[in-house]
Image (cartoon, rainbow, N blue to C red; front, side):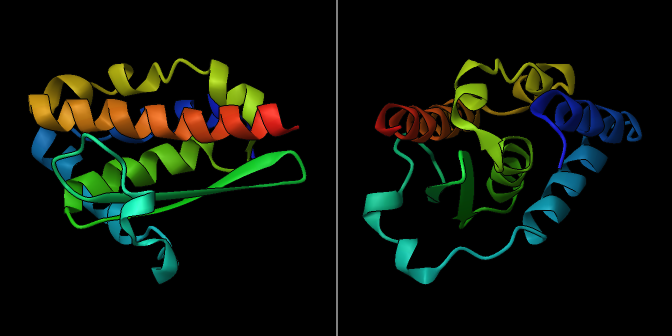
Length: 140
């Protein structure tokens, strides 16, 4: 399965294969298309990530000490971004998710190539994923 750092390094290597940002955006869109579908019962306001320009539904569950995320978005690039975050964080221990700095996002140059509203949405997606992890950790 790999730990968070291994997954981040894998993504950094993948993004290094592309020379320009149009190719990287296309790759993000492809990642979004490969995101497993979220159960329709989670596509409600209760699971919407607040502060995103696009609609993003995020659900998390905690099994055997690991947090598993599922998500969807109505925007292609946003769906690709949440797919990246899920790839890194899903299946990890809550404590590891909470303390991770998500530095790979800056290393691949994603944040600097997003509009201000998308960048805020990215921050809110990460915040929501960490809040789920924190709730699971506190619940024991």
